[in-house]
Image (cartoon, rainbow, N blue to C red; front, side, top):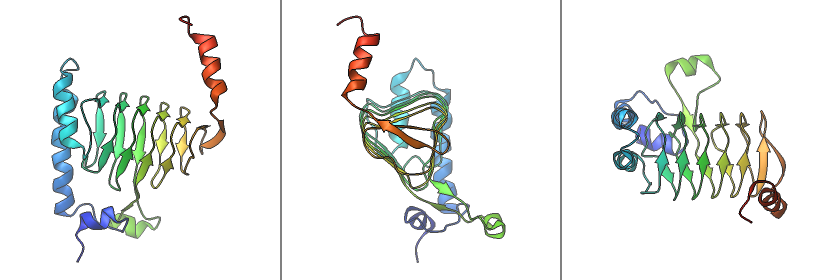
Amino acid sequence: MMKEYEKMMAGLAHLPMKSELTEMRQRAREILFEFNRTSPNDEETQNNLIRKLFAQADETTSINEPFHCDYGINIKVGKNFFANYHCVMLDNGGITIGDDVMFAPNVSLYTVGHPLDAELRNIGWEQAKPIIIGNNVWVGGNVVILPGVTIGDNVVIGAGSVVSKDLPDNVLAFGNPCRIVREITEQDREYYIRTYRSDV
């Protein structure tokens, strides 16, 4: 018989208030409590706590407090990951993030959902689907990414977007619901250099 954690990670209906999952969330909350009250000048302690919490992180991981997640052990981040203030990752279904990814303030990743039927919902059933984010992605402020979404490499998501569908590589997307506006091309690089850089 599958345990509740195994059901959760398989995307099946599960009961999060079972002791197994409750204990796992409590461990994460204890680490997060310490992280969120650590001095911002003590970057080494903050980094060590995140590496203790996440399944994958390294010395290049940088997260501004406050930060919140459900389990932590279901989060994997690549090199040079940065999350600004008030990031929330409900990582029940697993979150995988590539290299050189930046989150603006108030970015939320929700891998978990609940039944539409009120009776089932009130019993406590839920289910989860993974979120996958590629390399070189910039996520704007107040963006919400919903369960089961995959985001490709080199994507920029505009502020305030609600992302409910997959996004391919090399696109600018924004809106509620989030939609692809256009491809990101070499012209964007040239425009930036001409407009903003004074060293060339």
